[in-house]
Image (cartoon, rainbow, N blue to C red; front, side, top):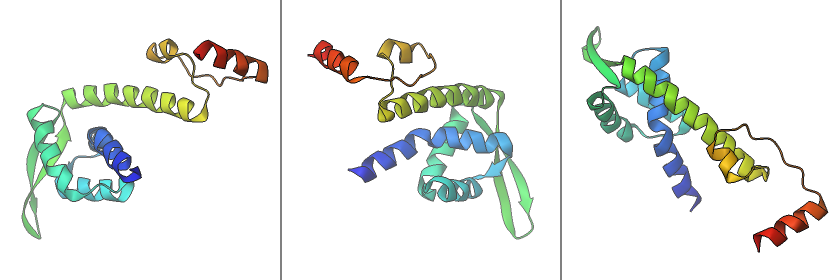
Length: 138
């Protein structure tokens, strides 16, 4: 089971990671795959379908660069739509990660506060307030 959550988490953030890498520098697919493998242990086979989908969605565009050691390489760069997607996904990721961290730490506020995007503040429960909380949940 732990492997399945790890794989699903990686797949869920793969597009965001690619957008973040391309925001720094244009790159070719193998180089992107290598960087993702080093950073999050994602395999090379997953990057090529993702790059095609991102191109179809208008998030990236390609251009060819001559290579002195072989055939031309197809480089990817962000489009204006890709930059907008990166900003939106980054904000969503940060809010999500903050909410998960709070849940794991046991400091999560009420769910409507999380949904509103309010900052997560640590909650301090006394024995008496914890008993009242348990009673309210039953």
